[in-house]
Amino acid sequence: MWRLEADAAVPCWRPESPPDGVTLAFTTRRGGVSEGEFASLNLGGSSGDREAAVHENQRRTLAALGLAAGGLATAGLVHGAEVAAVDGPGHSRDCDALLTRAPGVVLTVTTADCLPLILTAPGTVAAAHCGWRGTAAGLPGRVLNAVCAAAGATPREVRAHIGPCIRPCCYEVGPEVAGRFPASVGHRTGDRHRLDLAAAARLQLLESGVPPEAIFDTAACTCCSPGWYFSHRRDGSRYGRHWALAAMSRG
Ligand SMILES: [Zn+2]
Image 1 (cartoon, rainbow, N blue to C red):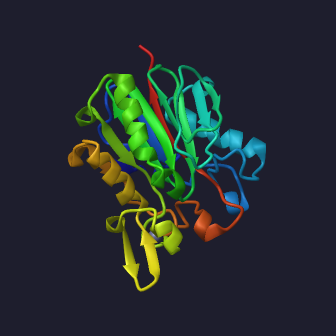
Image 2 (image 1 turned 135 degrees about the vertical axis):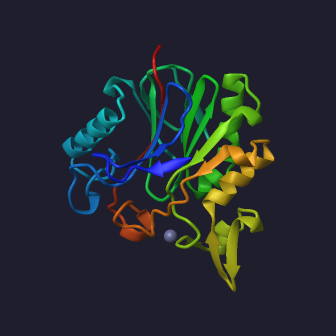
């Protein structure tokens, strides 16, 4: 379902057959103007990068996807489990997921290693930033419930999309973190735990009734591929951010 358009001017993961009038994307670090540790498509406004560079990166990304910059909706990203329903552009504080039924609104959440999750249902799109805290607090399941309620849909009508994030190949966590998740969503070797955030999100969606064939995963690890992705775990305190983006067109 998802394909990395590696040769595009702004290389992104794009769905091969998105619903009519719906634009979905997961960006990579390529195709922007930022320099140094932020090279090059850093889309995170609070990353420490030059503001002008981030704005240019955002402009390029929206233009490449055929979207109007005036529709941009962003989220505060506080590692919680709150979902904000929005009907216009702007910034929503104190939430980690955005949902809209309004055409022209471009939902974005920024991530580096955290799991970017996009859900679609008839007439509704949502985008969520799922770190381990939000995932442990049930954010994927909460976004699903919010999408179903907004769309008047059942979980069987929802499509779920998992973008590039840190994977168990690279995500060693302490027992205090691993203990917040079912044993089935990671690997344990002695006292070492490797957490699988994507499996944790998938499990919440499956348990709520999303069909397995309706969950589409890019399977990309941010930490493994420094040429393609930013990674907090790998790069330290100064690192760029990707976008997960979901929008419905007008008319
Ligand atoms: Zn990895």
